[in-house]
Image (tube, rainbow, N blue to C red; front, side, top):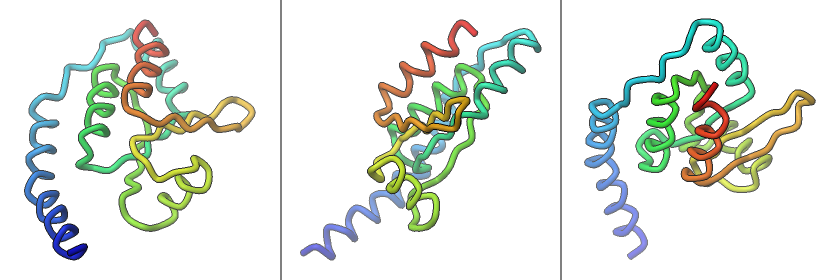
Length: 130
């Protein structure tokens, strides 16, 4: 029974994944336009941010849409496959749930922010007026 359930969801992901990615591409919001100096400052601040995500996760797509809307250059790591990136997410963040935004402060300490609504609120609060 477990085999059939996994097979069903893998098949569903194979079918819906490309549809979700196409929808993301077609509905990508126009980025926020800032003066060059302000955008450079935002880009500098974004170097301390990393988004752990799955390519076809609807919640990750929601966060990526907000990143596009705010014109942010945030590094994105696909943590869906087993490997070093997924292990880092589990070891340092405490769980393999995505989306997860790693926020590193000036002293090198990292905060791991889970939940798409919280990430969107954080990004909007920090960068919407920057």
